[in-house]
Image (cartoon, rainbow, N blue to C red; front, side):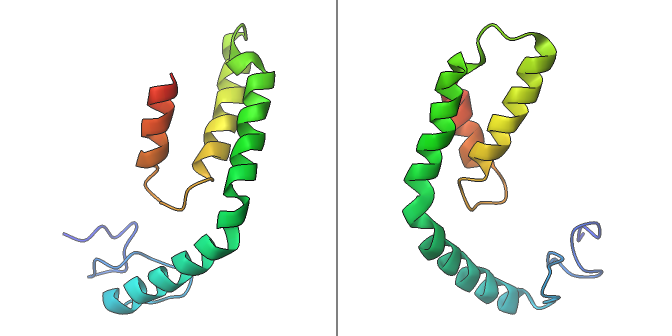
Length: 101
């Protein structure tokens, strides 16, 4: 059964900003946009990661923070690290964060 919260009614096509309702057309557009995004941002990936992890190191990897501050800073870093990769499910980042913990 299609998920009507995330998909167009009666389809398995994710709702999208382009209004594409055909799965093959959506896949083609996703491939093109992903390639464009990768070529545009790949040269900045290392620098962005270095900056984010440098800030985390400067904050002593969040050691010694109270619970509220820790949650706030962890949320910040999680979102920043999650933005480094182009996948919508976040599983890659979750695996890396689990290894780091």
